[in-house]
Image (cartoon, rainbow, N blue to C red; front, side, top):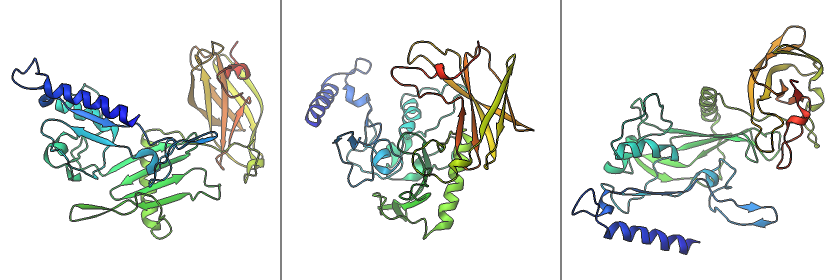
Length: 348
């Protein structure tokens, strides 16, 4: 695969170097073309029954926010970019869109907010200078964060300058600390030196104030984007503290578009509720689309929610103070062969 990739990329470069640009007589296409080579995430290390790759020396890989999952190759060539320069400046795939608009002198679409930064100045002036990566407000960008609350990851991370914080949501697992802090680089006089991109030395206990400050910043970023979080499952077969104290639904009623659920607390306080609904329940597999909206906690252990117009099926979620989630009714997991709607509440 590597040999094949090398061959065809080589053919592309040869074509650009030997083909005149029809819009710019006397110049080759390579003089007017930018090329970005990158990857979407780190390599998948294993599949059931087989180890398929190794991201050494980085920790973990695809389906993780550790460096093995988020650090990927990035090579950019084009007019005005010096060849052979290696940099440790922090960049992200989100940066490509504003950078391409800048290269092509294209106006930013009205009403759009960029999540990434324009790298054109960095690449043209000095790719090793992190001060040249600016946010839309003109401030130097020194922070990026990743949120992977599902699948096997169950983590969020934030990188601020030389340091990276990892927040593990499944910290009841004795193998996972709630917070991990790593110094990836050491910056002195504008020069970066690699320290621990392997994420092998957790500094959270040695630097608790820094870990907590970065954790607060991570929370601010996640709340600003209305992020979703993982919850504990009270039906998990192994022991989990407080899973026996989860609330339960006692009854429910529907009056027009308003649904009311009455619950009982069994030791743990209900802190919020969610209405999960679909507008196309019962359609063929893979066509169902489910949405979420907050439900209101009322006095007397009551939850109230208004069904959006067109709702066909719905479920109520209760989240307790110990971060356990209880659904009513218990909904079968959607699979390749079935939808979730048959076990949800039907509007009809």
